[in-house]
Each structure stands twice: as structure tokens, then as C-alpha cells.
Image (cartoon, rainbow, N blue to C red):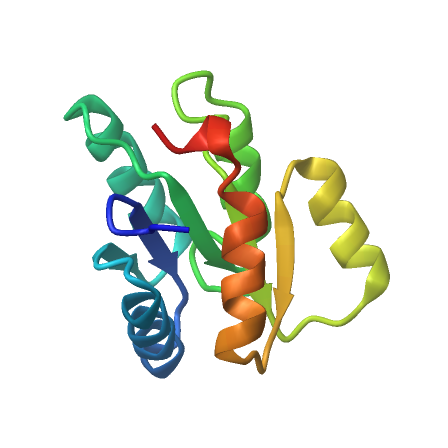
Length: 135
């Protein structure tokens, strides 16, 4: 799959995780990437990019972050009719099955467990970028 036209947002409070994701996504051909260190900053970017006419096509989001965690951000995204359909891939070291199920029920498109490999990331990205999400 050609990912060169994909616009992504990476949301994680840890610099090294964001850097790792940016590098791996870049290796896949996704180079139009913005980043945010918490859900508040992410939501502002998501809405600004939507309003500019160039919305994100995928969001990779950590679960545990300060200010606004990934669960709250996912809720806010899914409740906003403007951006509610953007694919969200939750990325976390949280292995509690009940939390993972909760995220999927809340509308997360998929879940990637840290630590992850480039192969795992690419499979998850491919699965959430369904043809109807990529225009």
C-alpha cells in the first residue's frame, strides 16, 4: 500500500516513543506527520487541521498521558461529528485486557502493544487505513 499521501498525528508524552513512531512511519512512506505530547494539544491540532481542510487520516495515540489521556482524547474525537470517523490506533504498554476491550468499544480502530516492531506497526496501520478512510 502506498502511504505517501497519508497525514498522521502521533500523540505520546514520551519524546523517544514519538521519535520512534515518526521514524518507523517515515520508513513506511508516511512523512506528513505531526506530533503532540498530550491529548489537549492533540485535540487542538486535530480540530485545526480539520478546519484548514487537510484533516489527519490516522491518529496514533498513547493511553496514559498527563493533562488529557488517550481514553479522554478518544472520547472527544468520537463524540465530534467533524472528526469522529478518523481512524485511531491506540499505542500503549497497557496489557490489561479489560482496558483494551474498553478502548475498542469506545471506538478505537485497533491497539498496538509497546514495545512494538516495525512489522507490527505496519500491520496495524494497514488494518486501520481502510480504503474508505483514505481519499
